[in-house]
Image (cartoon, rainbow, N blue to C red; front, side):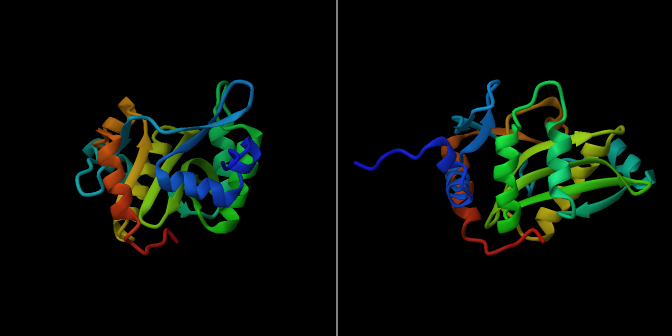
Length: 198
């Protein structure tokens, strides 16, 4: 019988990608230990049936925001972790660095006056983008990052935008909850696509 992988082994980049590909995602507990989760109900933003609030669209068009794609992933991750309660531990950040090197972790950055003021990041595998976290230092920055993400994923022919859990913030964009059985169908279809984020 094969010995189960240790926590450290599970955070090796090759194993992390295998776990993501099966529909799992990592989160650190209060003590910093990283565990993997695979909820029976999953939340996605359908890339063929999303919603962009009109007021937000107008705000974005009038704003002085500029956007980048995977130009500063590590800083986006650190900003997402910079809050009173976070599931993004130092151990997880170290593991994310390896995914960046392998080309599997990407971000959308929002800049204002050349300063990073918002963004989001996630892990990609084939045609799936597994959204992890977002942050905003100024009003609406993270929401405009999500607009740019959806646009990017559609341009690159992605199939799945996984956002893990439902929130009011995500519902604005048309996020829906689906059983894991249906989520798995999205995974299968995603892996038929040979696409890239960058």
